[in-house]
Image 1 (tube, helix red, strand yellow):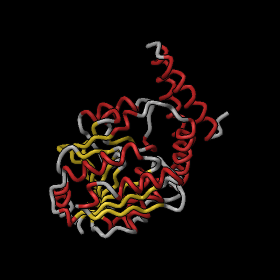
Image 2 (cartoon, rainbow, N blue to C red):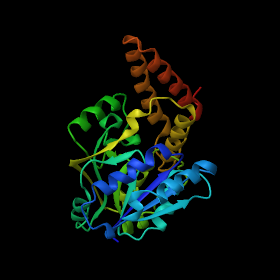
Image 3 (cartoon, rainbow, N blue to C red):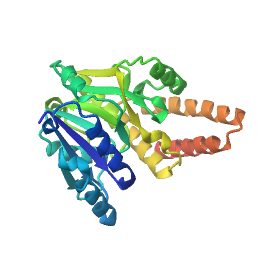
Image 4 (cartoon, rainbow, N blue to C red):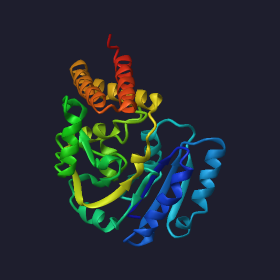
Length: 291
């Protein structure tokens, strides 16, 4: 086995079939060299339905496919760690259920990992505002959002300043084990800069390959969720504390950026975005205890 694909799911019945099919459609190495491990954080009927969909999918007849029902929804990182522990490939692909292959990648992956220092490889993301990478939180500035939009458009990735999208990436399993896998104290969000920092500390390489693409359907997620955003901010708080960054200064930078967003929404008379930004400011102030 050369490549193990880990897909962590949670009530993902509407997404999983097309996700699995895209793997099969664009596999450009022997199917015997690929395995798929679906780690399901769902429960009850949702888990039963998803298991049936995976077990009966056409991909399971051609590629070694395993469904693992997680004991509880303990977070994205924990689910991926379960999948990695059960994998047999030297290279692991972390893939969200709302990601789709749009072209063959596996041969290129194997070629890239001939570099013995490469630890993490990402490709160009389409969808999700076409963001393939983001600014590391500790380098946040009032205009980071606009700057990252421009840098993504130009494919100007800097592994010292940026981290790759966590929706779809490939890792050297041995090196990933060396850095401690996913930090399971992070339930969801900001796993990527945490992983990037630990890879950098080991002096391993992170590579962004702009010549090949995949689709991430995150752009279809339009509803704002207070629960999800609070989880995101709690993860940010943990990350900043873990590495002893100046949390107060960095959060001030976040809030400065939000002030510009609010002004822009008012100027454009975009009431929905204005309400969203105002709600997010309230949650940031709550999580970081800003009076």
